[in-house]
Amino acid sequence: MYRINKTYGEITKLIFATDLDQTLIFSEKHITEDLKDKVFPSEMKNGSIVTYMLHETLDKIRSLSSKLVLIPTTTRTLEQYERISVFKSCVSPKFAVVNHGGSVLIDGVLDKNWEKCIQNKLSVGSEPLVNIWDKFKSQLYHENWILDVRQIDALFFYCIVNLDTTPMTELSDFMKEIEAYNWNSCLHGRKLYFLPKSLNKWNAIEYIKDMLPNKQVVSSGDSYMDFELLSMADYAILPSHGEICNKFNPSNKCIITNSKGIEASLEILNIVEKIYNSTCI
Picture 1: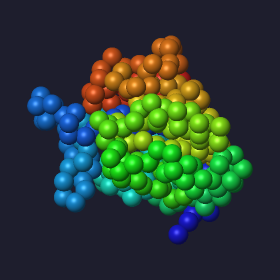
Picture 2 (picture 1 turned 120 degrees about the horizontal axis):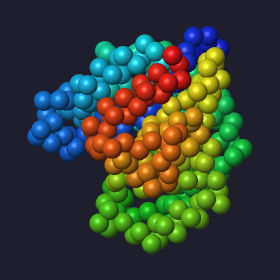
Picture 3 (picture 1 turned 30 degrees about the horizontal axis):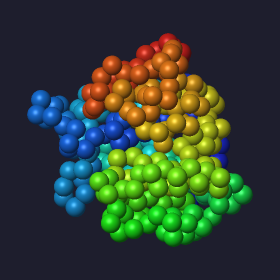
């Protein structure tokens, strides 16, 4: 079921579009012994904890969500996003962006108008996914380094790779080659993403922004895949552990946290609150 898009007239003074993984939520490997009493499970899968969030981070999200428009903005699929219990039991964002900007949720329902918009963008702006996949399969794919391949709603695909056996030189050459076909690629941890250039988080946020009476956007994110979101927002907040930090110079409009890891999530929200207080009160 899809929701027909319409213009919303909420009175709001700030939009906060934030990445989730390694920005607000973190896997168990990031939870040291001294942090265990400060966190709670934010996501479960098959009875096991997948990610954690700081209690203080949740408290701050609750506080801020009554003052501004919180938009979770993630490359996660809809199914993966819906596993995050925080956005069901604790806070219910009106808007969310999933599939790396390929899908917009309004009140938890996929927005039909954005679906049409993004399909139009992809059809005229980039080589079809199947062609890029065929190139990858014929030139580079091999089971000795590709552990799994997942296609996301005919929008993009990614591979789970074995970094020890990944042919980095050949991969780098292929990543450069597909730029000519208007595709981007990113090796993020063990995930190798291939995405059309017209598919990014900012385009979806801009679409939502046009529905709201106030245009200011604060964004946060840690990876290269957040580049458009961070560079186009009015304010960008980067956790200092993020790989994206080497793409930006700190300024009044681009703030890099002092904290790292899960503790940076609380600092990000404290900075958002300061921006809100300085611009909206």
